[in-house]
Image 1: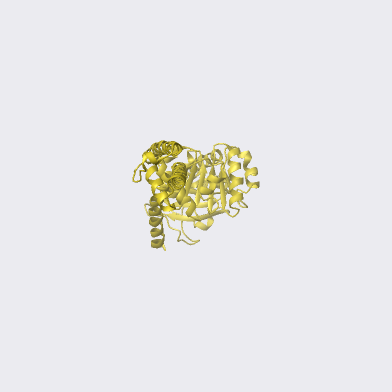
Image 2: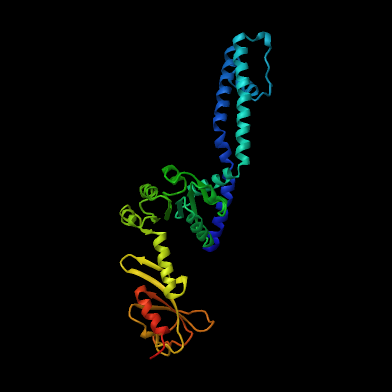
Length: 347
């Protein structure tokens, strides 16, 4: 399975590169359409005035519009009206070529054109991916973390500065509030959608449009105003996170457990849970006692001694010794009591 997934990722990257030139063609479609109209007009003139058959008229029209000049009727045999129309056609064709050339040069020289084309192709073909929608700096951090875990994701943002640190095929520059852009990023086929807008009103609009496109997706929202939490949950967000509240929990948890790994989370139905990191101090009240004597409500997850890596394999009779690393999960309100037991000397 990992090998198959790796092959699919490589195939996807190859297809993105092959699909990118379409972005150039898409930008010169008006010029191509105009050339088609000019060829039609020229062919009609040749049929009407030169009495050529359809194939011959098409050949003559293409040669005229492309300025090859392979077919050149005698000027003395041409009416004034025919000369006038064909002159206008030739001048128009030259103008169209000049416009198309400028468009192609600008498109090819703009690196973002190719990046955007690859990202849009990926967004319209991947399924069960994670879509990050937002205009906050946190978007780049979330995307980088998914990248490090080799998770399939696409970013939709209006901020061009997001392009720097992220892979070319991952970022679509567009309006997150535009439902067409959301579809281009694969919102209708995503497994998870992360919304990180700088304005909560915009975040709510993205959430509602995402829910309309994909009712089954897990939608996670970062809000700026924690009082909006119930509004987003009522609108269909599975998880609502406030960065300010989360930062406060992290700092409070570090103050208690001494390790940033133990930040506090609020879990539906279970209240607040946290993972705390503690060391057993020499002479403390729990030194030499079995791990089963931990305060009720705290679940031991890992233990380790000295420089040994922590292990989850221990029994209720595991003896806590001085220097033992203890990792527990539970209500953070209980951490202060646990710290006192692990650090306060016996009376």
